[in-house]
Length: 260
Image 1 (cartoon, rainbow, N blue to C red):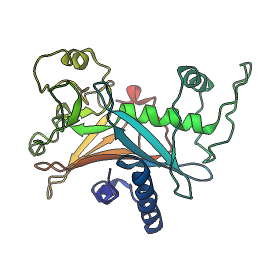
Image 2: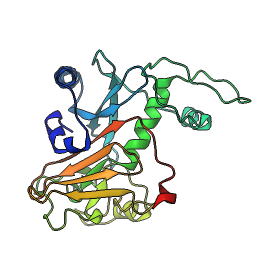
Image 3: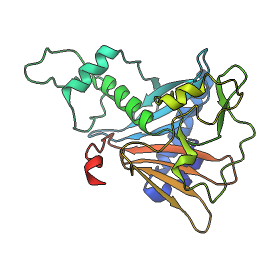
């Protein structure tokens, strides 16, 4: 999300101070100068300090573009989030950590009693949390992206936004990431140039994990994740403007299925 678009989700408490806004603009400008077009992804709160996260979408030879994440602390100097191996991801998951992050990337994670100690740092846990949040959220309107003649996902230049009447239906939103559903994967093998089911629908399980609201005056639609409290997405019907951002402690609501 562009920093200027934060005003669309400000009603949910997703705001930055003037100092944060100015420093993030400078930090993202430096990142864009050395990398591709990175945008603000969110702010993960910590006990002692916070993490600011940016995301860049890079083209690759596969069907779906690769996402690269970057993090910054109080210095607003963005560094690449390391890629996790399956072994490290499983090791962090086995720790069953629920406490907030400290804000220190080099801090060692506490091991479970009786388990084999491993030198795992908070930076690895941050990388895993970013992946998990992005997989369950990353909301875009359906039709904002398309498959080109090479069967590669690209921005849809003809997308002019959803109709106001359809913009409040979850079926008209998708996750912008590699799909996990069989329906979406099958769409890749179709001969049609532009498919509508190559990304997973927002009709997630458990049902009811999204709260949708439309402003009666402006028609602005906001979607809040109840699975990851702190994530909000927006779309302005009739335009190509949309985005999403996360502000929170990276705490997943694992009890959601029992509350709805």
